[in-house]
Length: 361
Image (cartoon, rainbow, N blue to C red):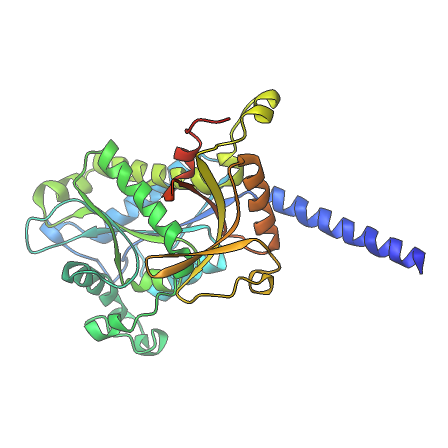
């Protein structure tokens, strides 16, 4: 019996070690890039330009830039002028177990509107956001059996949007973080007009099970902006900003990328950030869950905060950066593969990068 117990514990140890090694080696960050429209769906034709062509050129350039990072794997929903259903675009990302889904488009408006805006999935907050979602979602009319595939969703009916479930609520924070990084690149680097990070009911984002954004790179209906987006120079600059926004996001949440590189003696003395509280966000939802380990795959020390209309669930709480990295690995090993670090200072949420710039002990 003692021999059996010994073998049993040795086997458990080997299995746990194998799991940890697999986790540490699986560092590839998968990004699915989605060029809006394509094939029989030209997108908008503001000033005679073709949205489908511009979106594809920008996306291919984004992928070319990202592929220079050996830790990033790039996949595309299309690389040629072909029609891909919204449902299939999401399926490509889900089947790849992607870390990010980024859909690229060009805007249109009856006025001389201009500027960039990046959307995450949510209920529209104003009429303009609803109209943009309606325009992008209308592509399903070109699909076979769209009423069945999208459960009776009617892109032209506001009632369909009122009933849209926020299926992405678990990833809302990460999606907003990514959108913010992209918008900052557009605004701070390229000096484009900033129309902000917004929420709307885009079907292409609805069925993706990872942080997802839809980028409107500008208005083809604006002569100056349309000319810029149709130019190779403009497309290259927009692609660089999107790629850098993605890398900024990756660096802010990736364990190995955000790890601070110090000498051994520095780590021993400067791992505390007294004014900062680090936590691991493991989940989010619209309903409060009992803070019991069985609800969180055995994890203890889980706390809950109501932020806006969502309950955020956090694992651990410490001012020690080395300790929070250990807890992040623990959360991922428990099954929360999309968990990420967050930081608070004086009760306000700040980026982890900003937290690491504060005075250390």
